[in-house]
Amino acid sequence: MDFVYGLIMIGVAVAFYFIPLFIAIKREHPSGNAIAALNLLTGWTLLGWLVALVWSLSAFMPVSEPSKSKEEKSTNDLFKLAELREKGLLSQEEFEREKAKLI
Image (cartoon, rainbow, N blue to C red; front, side, top):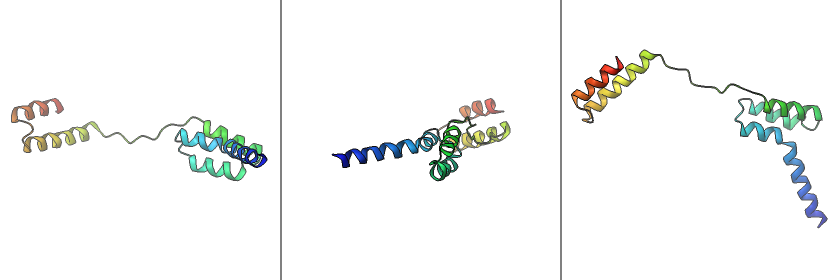
């Protein structure tokens, strides 16, 4: 019974040790790999563990795709409309109406 209790305690300790890493993964932190390395290598010191924890909880700006210009979007939409017209999914009238909205 002491062996099982010891294994459970080791599991709890390991889970507690990697709390900063789990938080970084859950939040999809962009510096997740660096937090993991810091946690793994210096987490045994209280200071390293605290730094990893604070870093994993820190605010960050999500990375977004650069927005396309209005003209580029309009051109792409126009090509899509023309493709739909060629496939017979849009009539010429519907094409002209949607084209007028884009221009």
